[in-house]
Length: 287
Image (cartoon, rainbow, N blue to C red; front, side, top):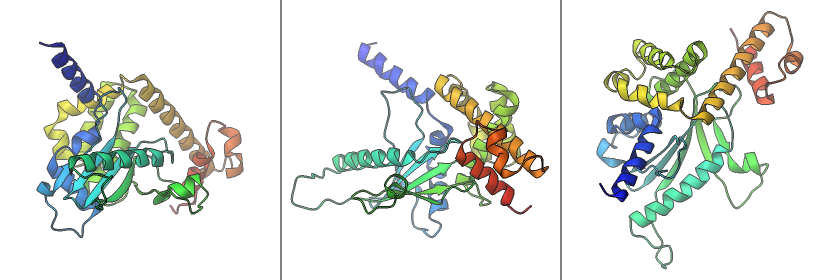
């Protein structure tokens, strides 16, 4: 076997190992169409054949990427980025860079030159963030100018719709619930295979991604276990779980009247201001 062929196989193996359930789930055109229909229930004409995955490959890095690009015909470009339980508006920067690279590849793929006088054709973008953590007071739309330029009318704007867990019965919400169950099982069993297998069992019992999990259980276990091999991701998960546990304790103490909202930061100094706002939102919700 040639050195080039060996290197290619190593890169492919690395990409497969670092794939995510999010990307693996929507490699299936049937699931991809379900996702699109969840976002555009009014569109009854789009079929599996008119959807193409145009996700940018990250073959030169070990990092886990949960970014999905979808081309609908030649007129619409959907970018969906997953944000796990650590919320940050910096994801807007990722979206901006991802969008620019997606358009660059689109113009090359369609043979259009930006240096000719003829105006190029480009698909209309739709930008989404799928957030798998608790919503709290987080917005439905995040805006680059609002978050980074205090709402000023600048030369650059990026807006993305944020999708949270809801009571809707669609494949996007099922994926979010799947992630929430996974985090709960990590809290209970640690970063172990039991946490993974229990996640799959619970979700199948609850009819969450049942068909996907039943048909690809071995692959899903492999994908999810690979998360534990990444030290940085492990630290992030551990930190998130600790923070969520503290938030749950704070909510419990508030409900029992042991502390008031002004004392949360004193009793739980590890919590961020955004965490405290999220706790307050939970407390304010009607029972």
